[in-house]
Image (cartoon, rainbow over all chains, first blue to last red; front, top):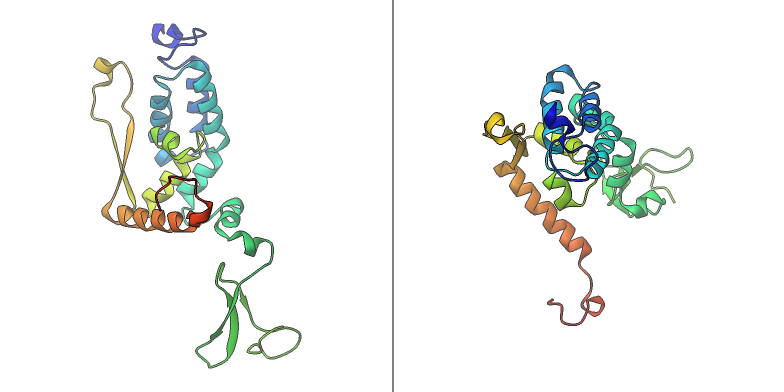
Length: 133
Length: 81
């Protein structure tokens, strides 16, 4: 108890304040049960040596990203919408693709963007092998 | 915490990234080998790049460096090419 109260309101680095400790412990609750203990320990250990202001910043950061962490642990291969957008070159994001002409195994032609891999198989009612305008 | 500071990423952003890298085998992690009673704090979690991760990290850094390289006429005077 002494350790918990030691740095409260003093503005000095040391043991975590009770509210920061509570916040990061709560942040581990949505995590899968197999990982919960590990991250609870990890989050709390990181609070040591921080000032109360840093603890507040850290705890709020951990709380705000806990669902992303949960997704990373449960579905590691799935990207969030934001991550997928970030992975796409900015020119592709505004619709300026860099098309290259490629041939498929059946011998037909199609276009693929060098940046994001988007494929185009022609326009209108033409055959799938027709190159669009 | 040190990783986030070094990478310039806010708190909480680093853990999901580390979790993904650990899942794909680019990182391993372990608990710090201390006695929490004598140290007065719990053990920290340490992350280390695997040989595969190191190779991929070097390649990614090289790509990022190449993509961000500025032409010589844009560099400040005195900066090496």
